Image (tube, rainbow, N blue to C red; front, side, top):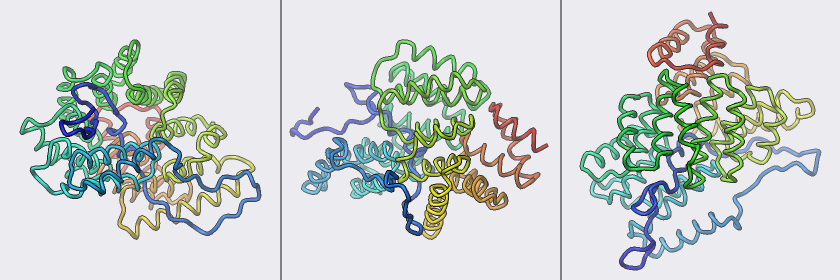
Length: 407
């Protein structure tokens, strides 16, 4: 698809010819984690051990990103060309979990980063990048202005609904999801609404809504992966391990590279104590901090993995320390979990979990806050968890067990 000058037009999540498109950008903030500083050198005793996997130059998606970046270098003030680069870079970030791609997306849009009169598609991408960096207030400023002046498309609404859900503004998120219904495919609308309903006391109906919407759903694989992943998470929180496994397997079978999906499935496997399966899933995913954390958590429980666990533990500690020196707060949830489940430092874990909870309030954020509060035997934190559950009607069988055991 090209514009009147023959230049390729940026494919946003929903354009006039493809309403669903590449939904994967929407969940970018749940997948992107902190940097990749290294600890002391690790010398494996087995030649088969993979130390690192770099993004492949032969990857068609990476090759296309590089091609678009070269073209942008020749047309640095072309907003459509810049948007193409930003979109490609965000897709690469979500697939790999490598935050450097988010930086590349931001760099592409820098000429319009503070421009109030930037084209609508640039503002929407700019907000998505801010979302990825967990700068939710700034992202909402962009999206609110865009939607209020009538320039916001379905992508803007969906991105705002995602952010509002992340920060716990559920009624506003529901309104945006409702507004989407007449603009997007049924599966997209159902997944948006189910994401909110599942954390506000209506997990059963949210799950049924998703199951019904997926029955005859077609469209891009990324949309189906998004829906199956959410369905799997809801099933897991409801205590339906078989349903969760079914949806995770279907999502993984799409062949779509998705770091968030792998992290969610790894958490499910850890809950099921299927540690060897976690290692099989993540052994080559050591660049992504969130995935490396889950790999280390599995290795901790497996005989014969002591050396790998020690190396990965030290590597994570170095990465978190480097992030602190950079004043990088993207990784607070993972660092809290590292402090609690690997270092056994409940007080530090609770401090990190509380700091994280101030910014975002997803199920994983509530879960680490509850676990740290229980481990630290902190009455005020436990009360905060109980009050949130009572206020929202949130349901999670694993969390319920944690709060019961703490009482």
